[in-house]
Amino acid sequence: LMASSMLAVILVVLSLAVRTSTYGGGAPNSSCENMRPHHHTAGTGTPAEPQQSPPPQKLEAELQGDGTVKVTLSSEEPFKGFQIQARRTESMEEIVPGTFVPKTDPSYGFLHCDLHEGVAVTHRNNSPKTQVVVYWTPPKDLTGSVTFMATAVQDMQTFWLGIKSDAILFTAPVHQTGSTDASTLVETSTVPGSPHAETLEGMYSRCGDTMGCLGNTPSCIASKSCKLLVTWTANDTGVNYEMTGKVDSSTAWVAAGISPTKSMHDAAVVECFMDGDKPEMRESWNAPGYQNKVLDKVTHGLSFLARRFANGVLSCAFYRDHRTVTEELTFDTSVNSYHVLLASGPFDTDKVKRQHTSRRVSEESLNLNLNYVSTAKEQKDLFVQLHGSLMTAAWLFFVSTSILIARYYKKVWEKTVICGVKPWFAIHRLFMILALMLMIAGLVLIFYRIGGWSATSNPHPILGIVSAGLAVLQPFMAAFRCGADAPNRYIFNWLHWMNGNSAFIIAVITIFFAPSLNKAQLEEAEWFVYVVVAFVIFNAVVHIIMQLHQWGMDRKVASNDIKMSDRSNGSVPPAEDMPGSPKDAPGGGFRRFVLGVYVVVALLAVAVLVATIWLA
Image 1 (cartoon, one colour):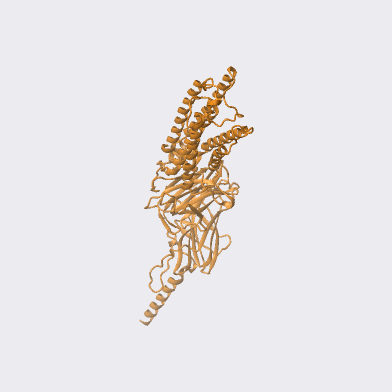
Image 2 (tube, rainbow, N blue to C red):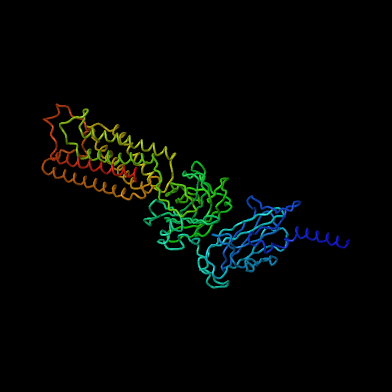
C-alpha cells in the first residue's frame, strides 16, 4: 500500500511538471491547426487566453534571389516561444506545404502538419529572444498569395496569436532553389482573382460576376474606359482589394478605402505610390475636416500584397480582415456595409499628397461580400453647379455679346438714344455690369464651398482668378479714361480692347479645363467640351464675317465705323454739332440680322452647357 501511494504521488508530480514545462522545447504537432499554445492558468487549470492587445512582435517576409523567403520575427520585448507557418492569404485556414530552413540558428525545430514535414518552425528552448530569422522554401508548383503567420509566447500566461506578415505573391510555378531563372518566381501584380492577373477585357467582364468593382465614373466599367478602378473579393476571413490607376507620372498616387460615411470622413485608406522606381504602399486615415494623416503603424489585420507600375498604370493589392480596428473605429465587413472610396492625385515633396485630381465615392453603402458594381451617380454639389452656371452665362453670353456690339455696332440705331447715350454703349455697359455681378457671385460661392484657395494641378482655378481680375479692371479703366477730345485717347481704346479680349480668351480656356475637375462631375459629359468648341468656332466666324463686311462697306463709302483712334465715349453730341438727321452706317440691316443670330446661338449654347452642369 505504501508503495502504491508513493507511486501515485510521483505520477502526479511528474504530470504537473510536464504540464508546466513540457513546451519549453517547442510547440507540439497538435498545435498546427490553430497555432495556440496549450498553456493553462496557474491555480485554476483552465486554458490560458491569448492577448487582445496589438502584439509587440513584428513579422516580416522578404523574397530572396534564390526563390526562398526570408521570414523574420522580431520584438523589442523579449519572447520565449514561437511558431511560424505559411498560410494562403485568401484562406488563412489553409497551410501552404513549404519547408522552413533555419539557416542562421540550428536550434529551431520543425513540426509535422497535414502529412508534411517542416511546414512549421518553432523554438527548441525557452530562452529569451528578440529576433528569429528563418528561411522558407515554397513548393515547386505554388501559385497564389502567401501570408506568414506567427504565434509569440512571452510567458505561460501571455501570448499573441495571428501575427501576420505582408503577403508574397506567386503568379508562376516556382522553380526549385538554385534555379537560374528566379525572375519568374513572383510578379508584383495582384492577388489571384484580381484584375491584373488577366487582360483588361477579362477584368471588366468579371466585374459583377466574380468580384465587386467601383470605377472613377458610374459608366466607365460598362464602356471599359476607367482611369481608376478598385475591385474586391471576399472570403470567410476578409476581403481582397486591388486598386488600379492610369497616372501621368511616377510622382502620382492612387488610394482606396472604406468609410461608414459618404463624406470620406473616418475612412481607412490604403495608398499606392512610387518610391523611386519601386511601387510602395502605406495606410492613412481621413479625419473630419478633410484632414488626411499617414499612420505610423499598420492596422492589425491589414496586409499589403503585390504592387506594380508599368506603362503608366499603377496598381496595388491589399487584404483586410473582416474585423479590424483603425483609429479606435471598428470596421466589420462581414456584417456591415461601407462606402468605397477611390482617388488619385499628385505628390508634393517628401511624399506629401496634394489634393486629388480624380475621386469617386460610392453613392450607396456596399456589402463587400457581394460582387456588386457601383453605377449610382454621386449627388452633385449645389455650390459647384451654381458657380459653373453663373460663370458660363457671364462669359459666353454677356461678355461675348458685349464685345461684339462694342466692336461692330457703334453706327447702328443712330436715331435712338437710351439714357442719354447711344444704344451700343448702353447695351455694352449693361451687359458688362451684369457679367461682372455674375462673376463675383460665382467666385464667392466657390470660395465659400471650398473654404479658401485649393491647390491643384488643374489650371482652372488660377486661370479663373486671372480672367476675373482682368474683368474687374475694365470698369476702373473706363472710369478713369481721358476725355473724348484728349490727343492720347487712342491709348485707352487699345488698352481697353486688349484687356477685355484677353480676359475673354483666358475665361474660355478656363471653361475648357472645368470638366476634368472632379468636383464638376462632368467626366461623362463629353459633349460639354464639344459645345464650347463649337461656340468658339461660331464666335470666330461671326467676327470674321463682320470684319469682312465692314471692309466691304469701306470700299463703297468712307467708313463711318469708329476706329481705335476714335475719341467717342458713346454720348450723343449736342444738336448744334449734328449737321442733319443721324443715319445708320451702310449695311445696318445685315448687322442687325447677324446680331440676332448671334444672340440666339449664344443663348442656346449657354442653355445646353448649364443644363449639362445640372443634369449630366
